[in-house]
Image 1 (cartoon, rainbow, N blue to C red):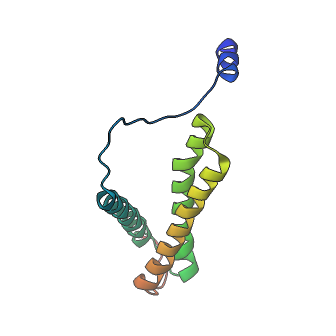
Image 2 (cartoon, rainbow, N blue to C red):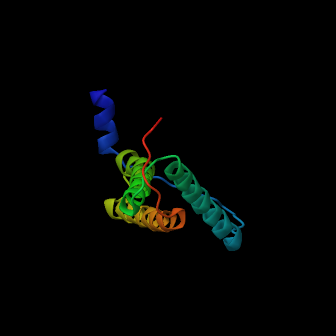
Length: 120
């Protein structure tokens, strides 16, 4: 194992995705990204709706925590395993976390106030 680690440390490393020819349809890619973000938001709001969190800040915090979890789960491995630059990973994490914060604020406003009820 030690020998393999030394060999990996001595050589170059990188990730390259190469397409010699690629039809890139920007509106289609933008639509896919938008749909992905909407599904993420709906799932977070669905999870929030399953809770008995009554306060505005509690609801925002719940969705924000889901966003932090998603950002860590999807970006830290790129830095850890593939050597993506920290500034890149941090930027993507920040984008995701701020997005979930916005979803949390909107969801908390839309769901309105309700009193916390004890679990049955």
